[in-house]
Amino acid sequence: MHRFLVFGLFLGLALAGPCGQRPYTLETEEGLLGGEEMSYDGEVLVFEGRACLEREGLYLEAPVIRYLEKEGSFQGEGLKGEAEGWRMEAKVLLGKELKEVHLAQGQLRAEVASLTLGTPLKGRGILLESPAYRVRAEEATFTREEARLKGFLATPCPCGEDVRLAMEEATFLVRTGELKGDATLGLWGLEVPLEEARANVNRRPDLKSPLILSSSDTGGWTLGLQDFPLPRPGEEIGRWEKRFTLLASGLGTSQEALRLGLREGSRGAEVQLGYASGVKAYWDDLLFAASPNPPDADTPRLEARYTPTFRLENLTLRPFLRYAETARSQGTTVGLEGGYRETFKEGPFSLTLSPSFLLALYPFTSYSPYLALGGSVEGAFLEGSLSLRASYAGRLEPLSPTPPFTFENRDEFQRLTLEGRYGSFGLRYTLDNPLGQRLYRLEGEFQDSGLGTLRLGYVRGSLEEIRLGYAMPLPERTCCQALWLAPEVGFNREGLTRLGLTFRYYDGCFAYEVRWQNILKGQYSEATGQSLSFGLSLR
Image (cartoon, rainbow, N blue to C red; front, side):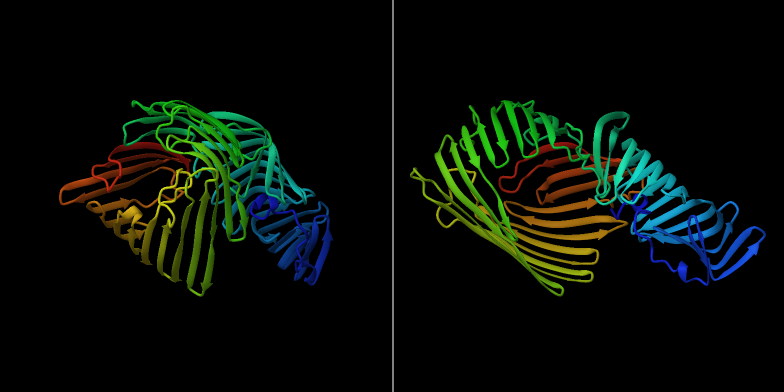
């Protein structure tokens, strides 16, 4: 493990240091002591001129290192060194302890209050900072393969410890980067015991708020828990496989429903009561679903599906075998969907090709075969602050535009995008043509790290719009409290067409978000009305 600075510092092969090449050297219990000059000061042996101390896994250098032969101890100031590629500075070497040790590699920074030179190495008062974690441990004992830690606590929060992982004793495995021990996960003032738990110090835990609270443009509210984790002993923190869902949707409307679900990885089951009631069960590539009261003519009353996926380098194939019964169609579908992606690069130029297809057959029925052919091509140029991109994507249904089932339906469309950016300025043009409903977009953008992002766009579809949006610059992680706003407005000659506002409050650990949007006049079949959602995420 080469990214966790403190724990991997002293666990390696001896450095090929130059200490043995000094004119004067002395073998001590703590390693080879050397310097370009040597003198006696009473019972003190003084090494000067790039004085050094070297042993397996450790190299120190200072202007002067004093060695007390009777006590077998050292004295030195302003020490610098290296161990396993990590840069190290220590204010004082006193006896057999380094004091106020500063460690660094890449973007990692650490401080150790004191470090004992004995075997094994022992450290006290360890603090580490990285782009994702702040870590502290009261004590640590290091060996070549692992580190034994006491009083360990890690938090991904920039400030405070509202989310924290605590272990009284933990084992850090150097090779894999894994941390194991009986852990407690702290969330605000709540302590959740996890028994035996694992963490990987290379990545932040994937902790997302399972609480859902939002309203849609139809006026209904959604409230409940989605993918609430149920940890099991031995699982990595944030990567829990078992999840629970209890979600009420359509509250306040005629489409009220309650969904209960339990999944573990790619296996699980769901039950929905109320509107569009039904059951669903899935096991890897297999799915079974039944709904006695489908909400529309395209939702199956009964469905059984097998959809494995095969990947070979840039080629992806997804065959499917499906039986479904809807109010319109009934029968078996045998199909194959595939895609290929290849990128060619030459200097600042790149070209990406992505062809795709889908073929569906309906044996033992009178339905005609269905075929969809599509893909995209994208060219790009990137040189310094200048970037240019042009892309085209489209899909064609040469046999029939309406397959008997919506599962395999891939509507025809065309999309052309031209984009250029130079420094803080950007310009983008998009032409969308799904099913003959042309939508033109021309958008300019100015982005500055101190001022934020300003967007001005012209949209023409079923109506003409001018859209104006602004987003404040995101706060630095070192900022423990901050507010962030992103308003947007759309208008034309007849007045306002849309309004929106995203508001976030950042504390030391979380970002609390409220998003509101009101579509007064939509493009084509775009739903009108207000929507509101609340979010919570880890900073």
